[in-house]
Every structure is written in C-alpha cells, then in structure tokens.
Amino acid sequence: MLRFQHEEAPSRHSLVAGMRKPCFRRGQAPPSSSSSPPSPRRLTTAGRRREKDPKAQALGSFSYDGLSQSIHQALSTSLRSDSVSPMTPLNELQFPVGELSAPKHTTPADRAAYIEVLRMLPQRLDAAVEGLTDPQLDTPYREGGWTVRQVVHHVADSHANSYMRFKLALTEDWPTIKAYDQDAWANLTDSKMPVQVSLDMVAAIHARWVVLLEAMTEEQFALGFTHPVYGRLTLDSALAMYDWHSRHHTAHITNLRGRMGW
Image 1 (cartoon, rainbow, N blue to C red):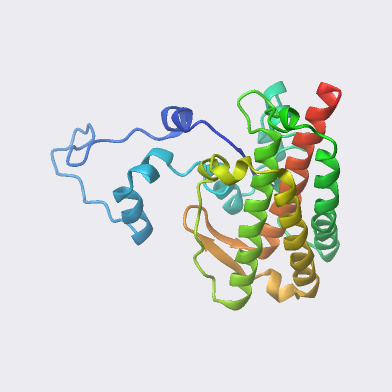
Image 2: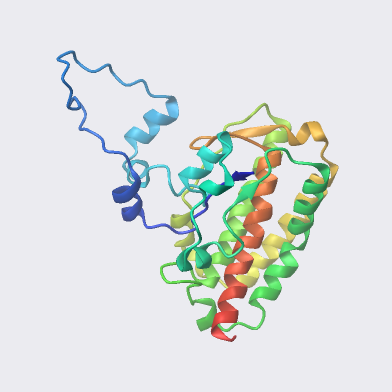
C-alpha cells in the first residue's frame, strides 16, 4: 500500500520553522573542509519562479492543493505499513478515516468503489451539514482547524480543480497543471458564503465527473498530469486520492457533530 499524508490547514510558520531544511544565504558556501567554491545551483523553470516569489519561498512545498510534501514521497516510494506512526488524539481529529492510502495497483473493483464514493459525496456532504446554524457552521472541526463552512467550500474548490485536471490529462500529453494555496483560498471572502452555494457546486461537478470516470478505459486511467510541486500523478492515483478526500472531509463534519451532540 502507498500511504500519504494530508493536512488541510497547516500553520505556515510551523512548517517553515519545523520542516524546511537548513539553507544558506545566496553566495555563502556551507561549512566544508574543502576550499573549492560550491557549484552553482541549477534551477528548473518552476524553481526559478519559486525563488523569485517570496510567498512561494515562505510556503515551501507543504500546503499546495491540500497535500503535504510526504504525498510526493509516497507516490514514488512504497512505504511499509509498519513504518507509519501510531495515530495520536490530534491525528484522529485530523485524519478521522485514516491517512491517505492507495494500492500500488488499482483494480477495476477498486475504481468502481472509488467512483461510487464520488457519486455519493454530494448527498453525504449535504446530510453532514443539514440543520446546522450559522454559529455551528463557523465552528472549527478541531482546534486550529478550518470551520465547517470552510471545509465545505474547500471541498468545492478542491474537487473543481481535480475535475479539470482529469479533463486536461485526458486531452493533453501529461500537462503541467497549476498548483494553488488552499489555505489562502479558504480565507477569501467567498469562503464565508452560505454553504448551499458550494453544495450545489459539488453536486454539479460530481454529476459530470462521475459520467466521465465511468466512460474511461484502463489505458486512460494510466494517463496523468505533472504537478509543479509533487511531480507526475496518474489518474488512477488521483481517483484514489479523491475517494479518500471525500470521506476525509465529510467525517470532519460528522465527527464534530457527534462530539458536540448536534
């Protein structure tokens, strides 16, 4: 099994302070016993853009599209199940259905199950927020996490992006897609709107997305796109990711309701 991690709203400062590798100022060589000058870095086009972009530098590569850096590592390396850390109470709130995982090889039965989850998401997400008041919708699902309202709007944002990436991958040769900063998106004004707007959006997106998925062939699921941070991702892997993403965020809301007695 491939295992991934997902963090929906990490602290930028904690990520930068706790996870980024030590670096040196431009022109300053790292400590070394050798007196030879360091070789100049070679940056890709994306790397040059990130080097020139202070916001990208501050974010590192940890909060694009709701995915942590470890997803990229897991996509290229199969991790042994006994290497996964035990779930802590905080992790259980963050990852109520477990951390993101997907089989190394997806079967037709796997795909059918994933597609069924996507088919049912609009109904399940609607049921998860049914009857909640505005103060309840504006309650974080955990300390330091997004509010229920932000979670619903995030699902619409994220799944709209994923649907378009599927269409790009099906019509272009491994296109490089555009990443986005989900934390910044979650704090835009439209994420304060009534949740019904995004519930309707999710319903429309999934109606079309499921039709597209059900018509895809084995060969088409092997197609994919290149993420500017995480690299190449097949549509099989992306489908498994959004099966989990659907269950993950719905459980954030239903588990909060259970704990609060709503």
